[in-house]
Structure formats: C-alpha cells, structure tokens
Image 1 (cartoon, rainbow, N blue to C red):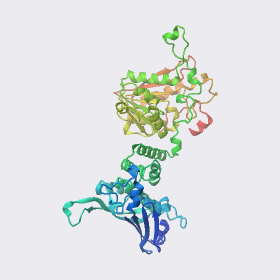
Image 2 (image 1 turned 45 degrees about the vertical axis):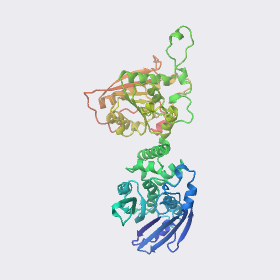
Image 3 (image 1 turned 180 degrees about the vertical axis):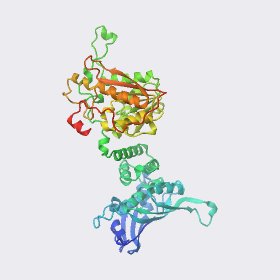
Image 4 (image 1 turned 90 degrees about the horizontal axis):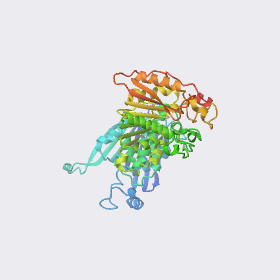
Length: 530
C-alpha cells in the first residue's frame, strides 16, 4: 500500500521543510520494521520548490494471518477465499494507519526538536493514495474529508478495466488537497482510513478510545459524521463507542464553558456520606409521619429526607398525569429508579453534564441486565442546562431536584431559559434546600452550606421571589410545598416549587442578568466562586 505527501515551497520556506516535520531526511531511503511487514520512506522529489515524501508498506500476508489467529475481530477481515489471499497488502486500510503511527510518531504528535516552530505552520499539502477501501463509496469519502477543509478527488476503481460492464470495485483512488499542518493531515488519515474500510486487522481494546480521542483532538468533536466515525473506528463495539461519544461531548461542553473537563465531570462523589448531599446524620434526624402500627406503640422509624423528597416529586407528577418526564441533573439516578417502578411514566430521560454520573446511573440501575421493555422507557443523555437542547422539547414534566443550588448565580438565567423558555414542559418541579433550616442540623457547622459544591442556598423568601419571577417571565403559574417536617420557626428542610404552564400566556425573553441573586449562606470559598 502506498501514500505520498506533497508540499510546495514559498519565499523563506523551502518545501524540504517537510523532511524536518516527518523526521525523515530527504536524501535517504529508510526502512522500518512493523508487526505486519516493512515500511519504506523515500522522497521521489525534494527541492526548495516541491517536495514529496512516500510511504510504502510491504505487508507480509503470512504474518498478518498468524497474528490475527484467535483474536476474534482482529483476524484478517477479507480472507473469505483463503487465509493467505486478501487485499491487505495493497489497500490503504488500518494497516497503513498503524504504520503511520509507527513511522511518523513525532509528526503525529506535532513535535520537531530541530525546528520547534514548524509543526504549527499550515502547509499546502496534497495526499495521494491509489487504493483505498471505501464501504460507502465516493460519497462517504467526501462526507468524511470535506468538513475538515480538504478538496477531495475520489475516483472509483473498476473491477477490471477490460470489462467495464462488471462495474466498480469498493476501492477508490483518493487525492486530498488543502492547507493543514502535517500533524493534522496525518491524524485525519490515521482515524479515517480504518473508518472507510470499516474493518480493523487487530482486536479493538478499550485503549482504542484514548487513541481515537488523541488523534481526533480539535476536529472530531465538531465533525458532522462524528457518530459514524466513532462507531466504525471502534469496530461497532457499543460500550466503547458510547464511552468515546460521552467524552467528546464532555470536552465540547468544557470548551464552551472555558473550563477544565474535570471541573465539569464532578457530579459523582467518591465517598458520599449521605444520599443527595445532606449533612452526615441529617436524614436520620428527620422525623417521619407515624404509621398505624407506630401509633399503637411500635418504635418510630425515620424516613430519609431524600426519600421524602422523591415521594413529593412523584406525587406532583402523578397529579398532573405526566407520562413523559425529564430528570434534569439526574446525578446517580435515584429518582430515575423510582420513575421506572411506575408504568405510568412511559418515556423517561435522565440528563446530566457528568459522564461519571451517567455511568454510575447505568451501574446502579443495572441497565445492561434490565428487560428490554423496561429499558426502552429510559434514555440517558449527556448535556448542560446552560444551553438550549432540542432533545428536551415536548415533555409533560421536568424535574430539577437539588440542582439549582449547584449552578453559579450568573448562570441561573441560562438554566432558566433552557428549561422554561426553550424546553417548556407543561410542568416543572424544582426542589432546593431551605437555608433557614440549617440551624436544625446538629452535624452542620454554623454558616456552612449543606454540600461543598453548593454555590448558594436560598431562604424561603429568596426561593419564592426567584420562582415567581421565572413564572412571570415564561408564562407559568407556581405554587409552593414543604418537603419534610415544616418547622414553625424555620420552615421545612427542603422547599418545592411546582410550575404549571399557563396556556394563554406567552413567554418573555430571558433577562441578560440574574433577576434574583442569592446572598445567604455563602461560605468564603463559594462566594469567591460565585
């Protein structure tokens, strides 16, 4: 299999700079041993005006078959006629992609010790491959390469030029031209050659996800064929494909927020003392209503506040006869589990920005073992409530359970518009801690919020003011309910607002800044972050 990389020079930049970028001297022919044969690098032409580097990979069919034995999908993919008769030595497939990573490792990374300024400079490049397997034809070739800025020449290779009536083969002659860095060009080929072939000559292990994301950095997250590329590159292994897509979405969200991916993907605590982030011992201290048996003298068993909160939410959803429900900021999926227990909820979506939270939800709910009829009711989606999302439209109800207090106050208007202005479910249920009740938690130091990630905690008046303003702006009506024991002095531990869409009222555009900025119960650290 054969690849040529050609560039032209200009004033002050000779074309032979390509040799520095590829770390291969234009005056030498070099050979490199690979697992499946020998790779040769040489330069058919090399002067200041024009320079062409050629990579010739001589594949050993015997080594290919021997290494492929017993490796499942890693065996030679096109050996239907005989083990030693296949197209791998001639077609630019995953074998060539591996040779690129072996022979041009430094160039792929964008490194050049001799001329460190060169790798970042785009060059006029032309790439030519005489035989590329393309399952999808020339149309797919263009869909893959044109969004990356390449001018594509893709010509079908006839099965036999002497018999045109036989039609075309599944191979194309591929030519690419464009202004790119050498590293970008090599990464595009490294990922897209096996995607076009839709086969790999080796077993696809979990580390292939890391390879894909490294090579796809800067272009794969925004590629219109992202799902096809990811699925084919990872040999259609669903678990690996899902992992890659979630990590790509996390990277996109982090870039949009101008923050680190690790800061966004922090929803799952490694050692949470209590469910839903309540202070240690807090839920156990919450009294519950006595049952008939308890009234007869049995010992009263406290109901955890998180359980009471979910029961209150489910009560509202039953009241409004919701069937299609969004759990926005679903965390580890406790509410999703309760929703799945009731057949009335036929379409359930759990959304969270944290990939780890969604993975924990899958583990907790045992989605891989769940009956198909049950699992079809649930869909987990990675996304941020700071942005509008067309996937969230058309639902009966949305739940924001212990979510708003994790949002920096300047971003509350964005969340508000994404939920109430864009998604516009018929009902929205919001729960949040009542900061006034914190004095009742013996385990909570004075002046501290209940969870270290809380940006704020509202008083009852602040929460009601915010809720009424949101309802007014977006055409909803709102009512308030206590969750837990309603203390006559400080109110309930959790406050709930139920928003119902008023059909005869149109929404008002979201304000440019928060209309109600919480000010109470901010620790110095949270105040700085807010």
